[in-house]
Image (cartoon, rainbow, N blue to C red):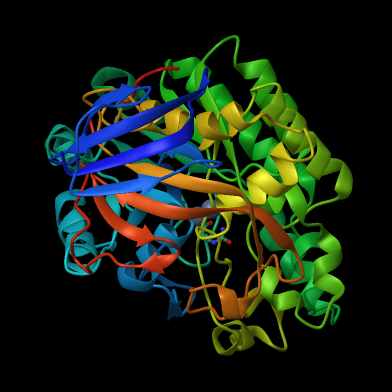
Length: 457
Ligand code: URP
Ligand code: ZN
Ligand code: ZN
């Protein structure tokens, strides 16, 4: 055997039990108490949790956006992932307007293949759709990409999709079994509000949030859900932030195959951050909300109205954020997060009894593996599945500050927070990538995950 992980507590969505795990050739080959035999490496996990590697299904590495390119590429971004116990990330391959879907995927392979420490897959972020491109979808799925994203906003950046395009993709999703993701915000209303604030000299970070109030998100969420219900398509709403949107999702779940995601920052941070001198660092879309919305998101998870947590890792450094130092509309939207997802969820969610430890594994591994077509190779610890494994020390404390983290944004939105509970080891298909908190993996060793059809939960 290549590896035995001994004496840990195994955590799955449904079970918590003590057992050893044997790994050979990248797969889990045995799970039992006091596993007999020897291995090239034996890791003592006593006192620790052993969990399926997290899947961060929402990242933006090396992405051109708002006049710049995200600060983390697949090298630094997947290093962050490994430090955070993420074994697979799913990144948005942004379609250049003059390229087809397969060309877009090729561009993203060029960015990721030589650099990744962890496994990775792609969604195509659709910026242009023709009936010829629709015909390419079966080939895209054969290339291992079974999810597409459409932006209901960012008309100024050329990313916007109208309702008809979303409807068309949802129709096709039903036919072919892929997933349609939407960034749900009402574009015309928020653009009008942005313009009005700027015209009146209200250009500081707080007006980013004011120009994108809850109803802007909830209305677009409602519309996307209505389109999914009408078509019978498969819909996943990314980065949900507020109570009103959760209500829309809860209502639609009886009628459609629909899913919602939230992110650690929408569970733990509020719009007060925009009033701080570092307010620009928190400009992401949708914006941070109120304490009540944080609570609603935890309830959405606890009650399993929401299905996943992902990070929307979209890192920019302070110099990039300063592109909008005099005008919030020019600040590149996004913040880092893949390294801190599990520590924040554990410290703020599990420790504070807002979700269970088993639910944490469900939202960050099992559910995304199914929804995004990777189950049972990923998302579980079973004999025969990939040895994507995290050893997590619930007692290990770390301040979530830039000097302890690895994003090239050089800041963390969770600055000032100390996590109690950190990954110590991250194995990707049996390969140690993080070992005793040391990055030991090889750049470029991470593999593309060819995903199958969406599996309804
Ligand atoms: O502000 C954000 N979320 N930036 C990344 C792009 C997106 O909307 O997901
Ligand atoms: Zn988005
Ligand atoms: Zn995003």
